[in-house]
Image 1 (spheres, rainbow, N blue to C red):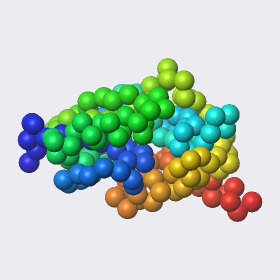
Image 2: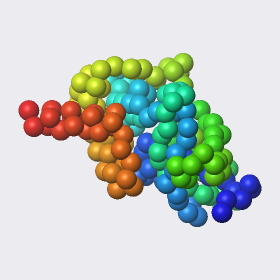
Image 3: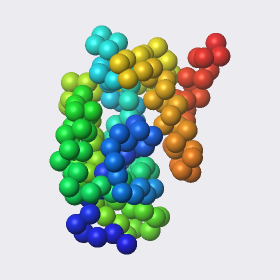
Length: 181
């Protein structure tokens, strides 16, 4: 059972496989009205200026749901975790407070903080064909490592929690084909 005063952070990209902060518990669930897309540029983690990588952000999509992991954090750690995440997500991400659903019913389980890269931020790359995005991911690397690692770890984690994401898995398939070429 969720309590109104609990603090939760929702991960849909790298936070799924590398939260980087302490938490009390984690739960699989989703947010409505958003779809996960590799439309955000990364020049500080998975690419460099002039050769950005691509990382996940959320696209406002009224019919969609985005599955991920919600982390409950202790109130006393909230400021330090926000400081950490604000720095980690400094490349154009803003923090939102959204409804989280733990199961397939329409009940709201709790509210979660979510970092979203809005289309008007300077790092936003926007839509492109899957092949183009896959090529960019395949060739990009940055201070946090190869962009391929980000995509593969996200794909692995989504599978391990039983989430199907056509966009992510198609990018993974295309990147693997580039590796085999």
